[in-house]
Length: 116
Image (tube, rainbow, N blue to C red; front, side, top):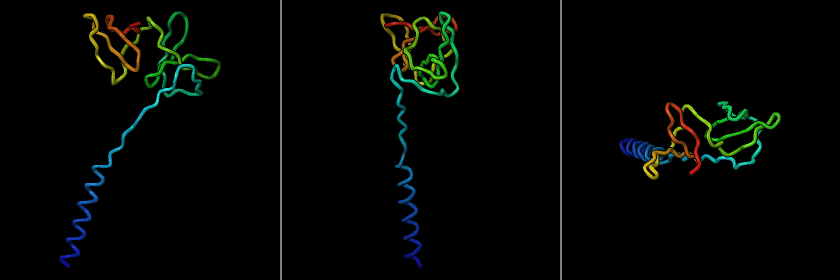
């Protein structure tokens, strides 16, 4: 009986250690420019130079009929907040923010897309 309890206890400890060490890694793959998608998950709409741009999950889109095309971030467009995971970089004494290859600078309460 003692051996049986010891075996169950050992199995429970080993099982617990395996579950703790088996962590999942999530890798996000962002579509390349020019990729056409049919739907976007909860996009934010921005109007820049009389053109609607859609921003969702860190990717910029433009409408093409009923579909959306992945585009580069339009330079000069203003956004209210930056996506999570952005990096702060100081370049030539200027504080810039980088997210997925897009550079932003703080301008008042907004962030503006800039070329670097």
